[in-house]
Image (cartoon, rainbow, N blue to C red; front, side):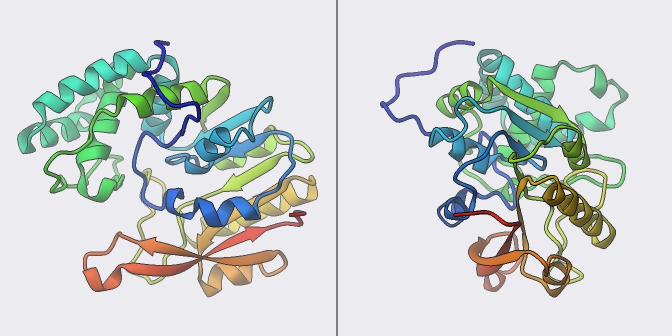
Length: 291
């Protein structure tokens, strides 16, 4: 791994991608509600990894094992490439930036329609993933039932396709992390007493038409939320420290009624109408955690 560019004494580690539902804007509300002491850290729906990078920045993951999971194979491939080969990734992203245009965007998006996609190198796939993330509408990752990326191009004048410092810093933070393309359910195979697990799943929709849960070809609705709740309870019985973010809906609050529920305020950006954007209440569910 090539050394990072010059930086100040305090290094700010942050996500190298945008992610719908990402927690960067909520960290000041989340950090006071997580356990102060824990053994190892698990983030089974890693997405952009905002909480992981913040905990690393604060030195709270020093000498701890870290496990980052996601069912999205392209996302996990990007994490592994950032971890293992940031310099080559940056070189590729600079080439993508030079070629960026509406035509190039849709050509690149269409790679996954071709049978040869699985034969492309990890670097190529990671570059495509990050490029699409930085240039598509609202940074939304969405696929159709066949698993094809189907988000239209965004209207950015100068998208930040290749942020070298962020990538190098993210690579440093990921060096000792175990990164797995796996279901969140696999967390039960690894956790032990006093480990900290943070669940940030696709949120339960506020209305029947407001679902943005297609981060993979798998849905995450009532049945899946109930299955996640069962895993939450298993981890509680194992005496793990568990925190779960979700939408402020009657369905979720009824499901987790036996646990502690805290409200936090988030900004909603994904809405076709500007009137539908703004502050919205979300919830943070915790099992018995001493602050």
